[in-house]
Length: 59
Image (tube, rainbow, N blue to C red; front, side):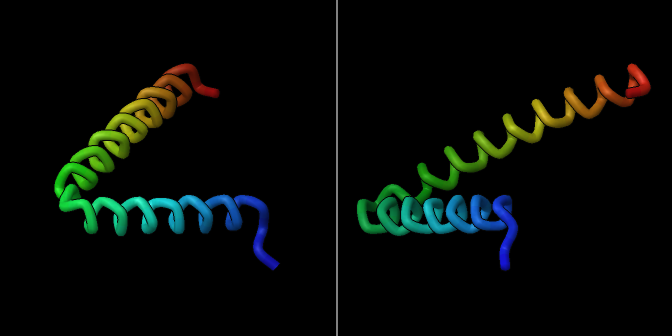
C-alpha cells in the first residue's frame, strides 16, 4: 500500500501531465515548460538555501 506521500506525489505527477496535455492542445507547451522550469528552479533554490542554513547552523 502506498504511503500518503506517494499518493500525493502521484497526484502531483498526474496533475502536471494533465496540464501538459492541455498546454500541448492549446499550442502553449513551450510556455508550460518554461514555467515548470522556473518553478522548479525557485523551489530548488529555496531548498538549497534552507539546506545551507541548516548545515551552517549545525542543526
